[in-house]
Length: 332
Image 1: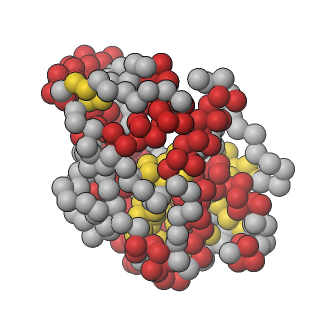
Image 2 (image 1 turned 90 degrees about the vertical axis):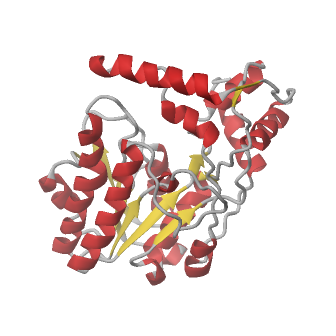
């Protein structure tokens, strides 16, 4: 893999985000010539010397065309996370329309590979785990729905235009530099964590370094063309198991308090209704409740068999590294 990426011209969209940034700096470290597509006015991030910054708008077909000029491999990592402002149209603009623009640009510039980023969330709730790439789509909101649409469109258009496309469906991404799981770590540390529901639902994680390896393999291996791959870690713990691991790392007692799902789900629904007319983000979403109730346990055997993917970081090691980063940054 080290030799494969040497001197290749690579475009990474969403390079200012957690996943895109880690992918971009890893590629640069492997000797690739990296062009980082960042949004004008977006998150300011320090990139290592040698990474070319392309500032543009993914919803502009012209910007997508210009960004792909001279590029060998495109990693389309950019995403619009769940938000009220802009509604479904804002999600479609990046997850679907920008995907189309970039693949057409790849055709024009004869790019070797287009790697599209989807999500394990396209499968929704897995009734009997582990699920796999053939498990039915069951998106639970506009974010997941537009991710399904974008993935299907990428594969369809790639085939129609003869652009080699591969799709990566990351599991729950975590690692140093990501703050999303502070919502679990901090309450556990403070003894205020409350489990919504039984805590028996599974959630499949992927440490950022493992995910980056999955992306690189999807960009390298010919067996990836025309295929979708779930990229996950070694374990998909129940939420009870997860908070016990977190408590162990923090050196505190495991949380015991549980409350029923339905009152919290109802409050989330009310918050969404009240906030939507004002275009503000609700303090509680129904989708956050879904984290506690939807079973997300997957097999990564397909990526292992076709790409040689093998996750290396176990949950306790990964969460220890992330929690150490939280401490160093004085976030906990």
